[in-house]
Length: 372
Ligand code: COA
Image (cartoon, rainbow, N blue to C red):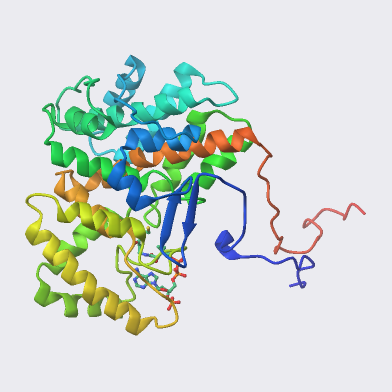
């Protein structure tokens, strides 16, 4: 094969490539720090609500208080959700709801903060409705008094959520709200850069988040801990998994080379939750063994605990079924996705990188005389 003539640098997976500028989140992977518009994630979890954090991301302002209830579902969205098979992937249900909302509302260009609020408020109602419909139950109307996390739990179960569970889920939503140029956010920005609408951008983002390398890990963490079963079995189980070349779920990150600050914040939240004691004890003990084994096997690469590990503890603690974990992550990430849509639109340039061609050199089609 001819030597490629294009010798510009290429980084597989765009690792380390600067592909844009943002004022939304600073992800400091080397030092294990995460800030939204300059505010450290631990302080936001300790002193804020998801509604405040979402407003901060959308507008740059930190409101003294903010209220974001879940939104009622338009009839065509409900009709579409009812038409899905009960075993549909919850992420597909969420993407379908967003798509139908976009088709009936035709959100225009440029995207607005109001559109961002509406889509973020619609998603929990859609996911809760699908979760009930697949069990043969009727969807529950929103309670406008409740914030997004509490409202989601209410619409899922049809009864007022426990305050501690609602607060823990709100904290999870804050840690999941935004994280720089991850795959789903980048997807949303690419779609926005074509001057397409915010619903299309969020549909694409949900599709990207559905992949197990991005949003699928917390339910795998739960399976992993269930399989390990007890602290005594951890050493052997983890060795066997690593010998088989498997990855330990909830460890490693493309950007963080230190302990993920979101994992630390969520561990504190999980420790404060009632009924978590045994499960958390197992998670903490397994984490210690896993970190030691990863260090032994990959001394060249710092593989630390990532957000998904303790996200699993919190989501399990609030009583969500594991197959809803990825879509619940999507609910949290709506604030970040839509904030990036607004940011991209405010200084838009079509995202259209180059690709290096590595196929055959120009040649004649069999049976056809060469054109020149
Ligand atoms: N368990 C075991 N080994 C791991 C690992 C893990 N969780 N994560 C990375 N490694 C190993 C890889 O096997 C690879 O080793 P090799 O060079 O001998 O093949 C090395 O570390 C580098 O991995 P790489 O795939 O290049 O890192 P990445 O930056 O592309 O991967 C993740 C990042 C998140 C995809 C990866 O760490 C992973 O799959 N983690 C488990 C899934 C997870 O928790 N996802 C949630 C992310 S928030």
